[in-house]
Each structure stands twice: as structure tokens, then as C-alpha cells.
Image (cartoon, rainbow, N blue to C red; front, side, top):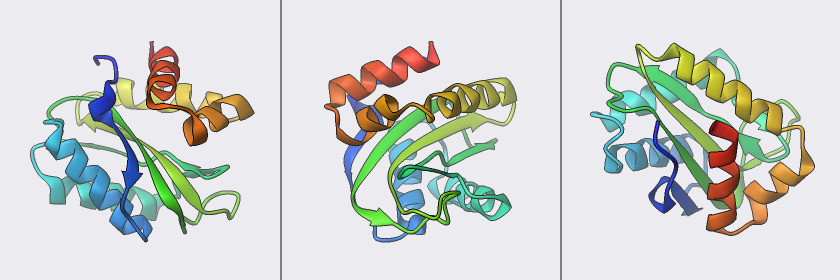
Length: 147
């Protein structure tokens, strides 16, 4: 997977609900050329949420899905101005999403990247960067995590 760029960020995600956020992420993935079908990928993100929440806590969710409509593995990072009810592990709303996009045949990428990011989630400085830092700082931090 190539490094993240500004095109992989959306610091003004327009959503009032979890489903709206997931749909916006699917649309962004399509616009970035990562997926072939917005609606199918959106449904996969929703299906993953039904299995168990991707709201990890501290206002951050890591929605993710693997599917054959994915053309290229990738990561999107989004911030919402408002808090979204997400059924998070800590019961708190979400305003930052790190969306993992994986082709069906890349379970290794999916699991390794999820594990790397999850390990960083226990560090307050990482959470603070995701929520408050500039685009350049967020890109640097995420790219460092996924190297």
C-alpha cells in the first residue's frame, strides 16, 4: 500500500449519523479509485458494524471491510465537526474515523493494519493527533504507524 496523502483525509466529514458517516467514507473510497462500487462497500461497512462495533473509544472508530469490490488496499481518515452515536466500547460518541479498505484476498493487510492502529489507540498523544493536529501531522503519524 502506498503512503497516505491529503486526498485520503477528510477533516470536514458531513454526517449526523453513523450510517451517514459510513456512506461518506464509501463515497470517498470510490472517488479515490479504491473501490468499484460505493453501495456494496457501504453495505459491507454496515455489516461489519452489526458483527461488533468498530468504535474503539476516545471518540475514534476504525470501520473496516474486505470485499471483492475493493480494487486497492487503503486507509481514509475523517473528522466530523459533530459527535456521532457509534455504540462504542466506551459508550462515548465518535468524531474521528480511520477507515480500512481491503481486497478480499488481502486479509494479511487488513489484520496487520488494524492491529498496528489499535495498538496506538492506547496512547493519548496518538488520539490527540487524530483529533486536533494538522493534516500534515496526521498524515505523518498514520504513515509512521503503517510502515
